[in-house]
Image (tube, rainbow, N blue to C red):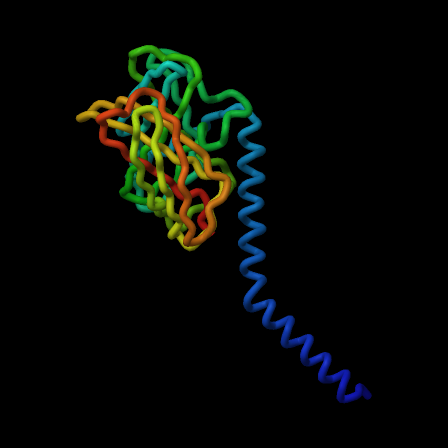
Amino acid sequence: MASASSNWALCATAVVFLAAAVSGCATTQDANKRIDVRFDRTLTSRKPLELRGTDHDVQVVRTAVVNGKDGSAIVVVLRNRGDAPVNDLPIEVGPRGGRAINTAANVPYFQSHAPAIAPGDQVTWVYESKDPLGSGTAFARVGAPPSPPLTTAGHVSELKASGKSGGSSVDAEVANDTGIPQYDMDVYAVARKGDRYVAAGRASIEHLGVSKSLHLTLPLVGDAKGAQVQVFAPQTLFQ
């Protein structure tokens, strides 16, 4: 028969285990899922992009080319016309009448995949190129998500983002109020004069914790002096 002291130790261990099960296992499980998503995205980005099918709910609202001294940027506005969130959609872009320029291997993941879009919402996405694209227009094609999907967004919201420009860059602040830590985020900035895009750029954030904010500088292609600046920080992880 077990002694009173051994019974007490067993009960104490059980209490500790139960507390860990209640408070820690879900967090560990979520963390493991986030690691898996990041790993899968890294592997995907190492391969050439292939568009298979199309996502009929996602509309390309507008594209624009911005040129600068050190390259070009393509601005793409996308709208989700469906009833459910979409995420991790492959997207290829290039000069109209030419070939896609972001389909090679080792392109950063969110330079070949569109950010998450809530139903009925639209997002602005920026692709940067070191090569000049001329003064023409651009095309964008959005493919269907992989099957099975890398991750599925149950709810999507953009992080709070704002910024001010001095002309060649944007001083931005991004705050994570999603309740979920965000990893490998692309932050996009565009500058407009009237209806014309005059500058655009992107920067990456490796990690932004829950209820945390971060200041960063986004270098721009083009000149934002005297223009209206907008900053976008789409959510990348959803659980």
